[in-house]
Length: 161
Image (cartoon, rainbow, N blue to C red; front, side):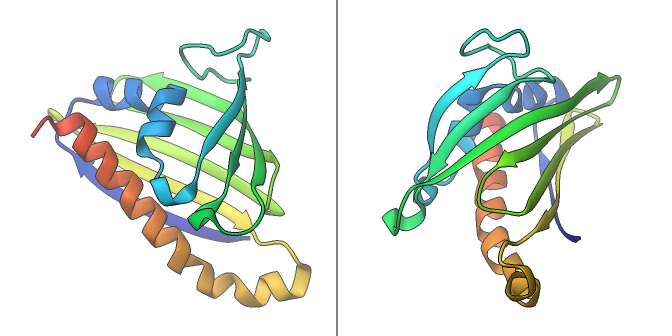
């Protein structure tokens, strides 16, 4: 399985960064506009609609239409794990329906004094079998732009400058 990882430092305390990434509004704020994101439905682990915090068991249905080209792509993610400990926190979302054969995204946060290290780690498989496998080495080009923008938006939202 292929992997992608990106890390950045945010000049904000862990708790603020964690709270920002724990809600749908954070997801919307950090997703680049060119992705054409639309959150369709959010269900908490107890079935409640639009929970304030995306706890383990939360399901997010969204759609994207990158660059406003082609048909809208539908994606359903499930938060499969979420933990907060002193000095570190993480959550894992797994695509249960969408454009990839596999997508498991671990969002990790590490306190470093009054700053936070944000790390995205994705394990994925492109669709289309052998063709997807042949294209995998080129997939980081698209991921780089998207995650670079996500990290920039995280810093912009939390660093208060």
